[in-house]
Length: 114
Image 1: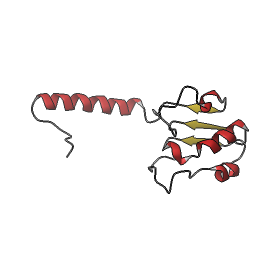
Image 2: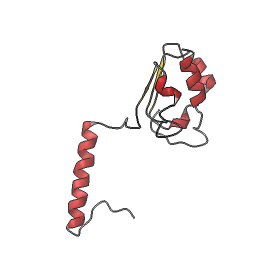
Image 3: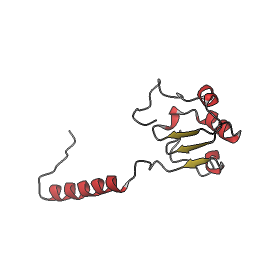
């Protein structure tokens, strides 16, 4: 579901109806924006085993509260909004951060925000 932001057009894009169209073996993955999926409808679908499982990296409320029902469902995998993390990406982040600090210290900053 990645590639778009949250707007009134995308809020609740996947709701009760869409979840009802999914097979009982379906896996819903959301790494885009939490509210794109109607969280209450998803909780019901998972608890009632109407869909197979969900893998979520984004939520209506972040960080996901410790007592949130998604944390206790055996058919839900939740991560703390780190789905973008990969070795290659972190190498770029850290290399650029070191370059930014060195350039700032040298009086020649790079990647300036305007």
